[in-house]
Length: 370
Ligand code: GTP
Ligand code: MG
Image (cartoon, rainbow, N blue to C red; front, side, top):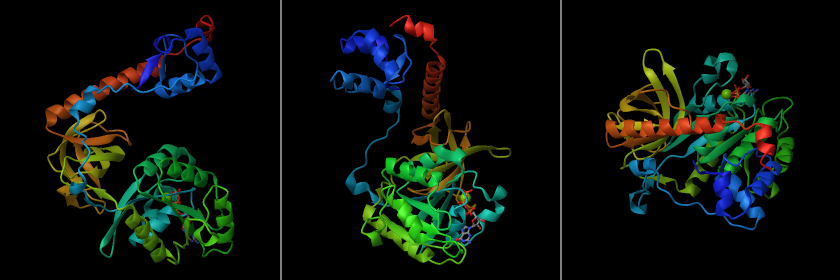
């Protein structure tokens, strides 16, 4: 990671270390002269001296090993949009997706609460849309954040009888941070207490001004129960996707993101991967964080075995040595040996990070240096 020792940093910017340590404490960072601070923290301190920090470009081993090149414009082909469904708990995210998929996922979910990100591919005429379902429960902030980062469009579900709630606001923030356009689905309009106008009013407080109120936020009133407005919602998603001109090169070694992963008793580590570039094939040597292996089998969202997965397509991947972390980037590399080598480097890095985060500073230790 990009970190620097406080002492080294002081030397670089030619300022007394004690002064820097004071500034660090004032900005809430408890560090002594031997502690590492991140580039972002260092940058803020340097700013206070009117110094502009720049990162030194150092190619680390991992980047050299992984051939994560930029694709040429002429190699890019259209790919389906990846849409994340976000919103407050129980506002109807999974029900809306069921409705779109004509299936019944909510009923089979434990207590009706989404526990993980489900990934589904839906065919609409000649178009495909890939949906990621996220849990609205407050404990799942990281998943919503990941969801937003892996996607092209966020569908924000707000129940018309409940309005904007804490996880609605959080979802708006995640989507904004990831610079992902938001389409608002005002759900449960069939209910007695439904008040779509109140929802719109509340949304304006978070910078989302509905189109019919002169803003640029698309708001679609829907009901997952009566299916009212669902076609309109899909149309809007395709419209926004079309404007984005989403493309990826399918003819290159695959790169993807781990959406979720678990240890299956019979099948070993199973990872749901959303392919972002290239095509993943059976037999490919892969690495994701500290997990590595060969793609032994792939299963699509309908439970079918597949031989390959192209950009935007989510698949379950079997064959990894261990369970990777959700959010890890998966790379296809030349051979098993290389995959293992990269996994080992990642493991080493993880160890270093672990030691850094566990080395605590005592207050005495800190104040003795001021
Ligand atoms: P989490 O995954 O737990 O965050 O919830 P969720 O947003 O996926 O909500 P879910 O789809 O599980 O729906 C919650 C409840 O609202 C269920 O009892 C649904 O039947 C109900 N519900 C969802 N959409 C509608 C709707 O349009 N109208 C009515 N009347 N009820 C709905
Ligand atoms: Mg759900």
